[in-house]
Amino acid sequence: MKKFIIFVLSLIVPAAAYSQAQIDTKKVKIADFTQKTTKVVLTGNMLHDASLKNQISARWNISPFEFCTLSEYETIKTDSNYYFLVTTDGQFKKETEANLKFITLVKGGQESLNEMIEVISFPFACANEPSGREYIFLPTILDMIQIHATKSMENDILGYTGLPNYSMNIAKSGDMTIVFSSSDLSSEITPEVMDACFDENILVLDEDDADEYLSPDKSNTLVSYVVAPTDAKPGSYCYKMLFETGSGTLYYFRKHKISKKAGVGFLAEDIKRICTPRRK
Image (tube, rainbow, N blue to C red):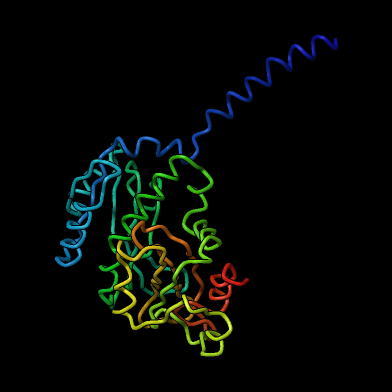
């Protein structure tokens, strides 16, 4: 009897292992991404579409790509032979309207965008009153979308945890220059907080001056970017990011729900996390 039980188990265990190996995880489902054509969906907004066309043509190197209109997208969106890069509106539970725009990469195959396999959805701009700063960061955002897509094909943890996982990079920023646009700092970041946390390599500059650092010529540097509604109300969300110049890699990515206490921009808790690697 004992030998029989061992024999049966020897048959069951390999079968179970094989069954588990066949589970289609996210990295398996998007393994064909680089071989399939990415359809870049144009919005009909001339400024946005012109910027998207220019930057995609200059920077998209991870897969074949073609541009398509919204009506063409509606016709072919159920075809799983395509991936789609779509500019989407994001509306959260307590909001009465969509306040933010995202650039979203999905695999086709479903009628609804929400049902498609999402590779990444990246916060891009305020929906109602965009500042124009988003187009300065568009090349960097497209670089990061490609970085994340590549890593998600190799690593399910990154594929499922998404952009917040890149905040672990901040541990490597101890000797880097960090440039904050003054408009990206919340009211919590008082002169006292700056004196306590900032060193000589953390700069707070006017928006235009800060954005000049977003250049391949500026090495070993991180630049801030915040995406939040212009008229932010409690219940909306604020996204805070630090990008490495040149590579486009995220070193910090967090969001918080806007409240009466927590306004738009980097909060004191963000600054403490960012400055921790700099403490000797």
